[in-house]
Image (tube, rainbow, N blue to C red):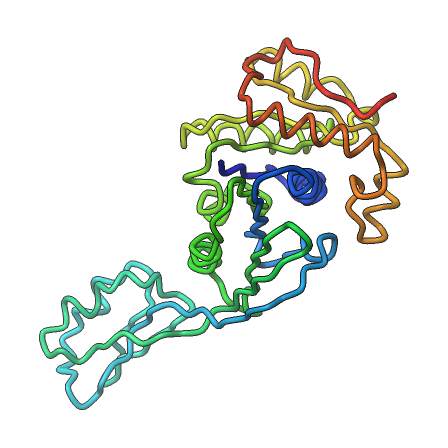
Length: 293
């Protein structure tokens, strides 16, 4: 089973939920893998503390023009929709950061003057922490597009009974690349106006992708009722609510998975994982889980 943890905005507690779910899953039978697809700012390793056993470079295909063969016909520049290849006077200029690796320029080049070469965009590191298999991507500074690296992170996923994907924040291409093909999407939000606005965008995204999903409200006791009202009115299941908890905040500040030190949080995230796996939560009228005693 593949579970994606996503959020419409950053700072909602997405990685806290993802790492705790991975930890409680590792305490039972069956294999579990954690994939950090937030390749621009991966931080799951801070909490899971894996021992990295392999690191490899990742590149994507970009064009290279052989000036000796080029006839300066301009076809490559005309087909490129992103101006990654531009004909200027007697030269053909290539901008790798704008290239989407479609290969169109090489296909239309009648002189066979364009070849595809690999352009490094980042690295993938794999390892293990106790019973959790670990994979994350590290995008190079200045690289404009992260989806190619996210695809490689997902391809590097080890065989496992449960795969937990920590997606980037937002609703743009990197998030879609991370969550597509998953069995369930858990949207982590907060009861604030910004949280509600971005939750609506995230809900629209997963519905377009036709993926089953539910919501977790973090810091559920510090905001208003608008998020709950929206979910209830739209038939969205609230799987769990996490109150503003000093113990959880302290564990986060120390880079510790809360479920590792707190029986209360361990039981909470274990039940949340069971709810997702059973897929029994179908309506927003169900009383959500809470870490309150």
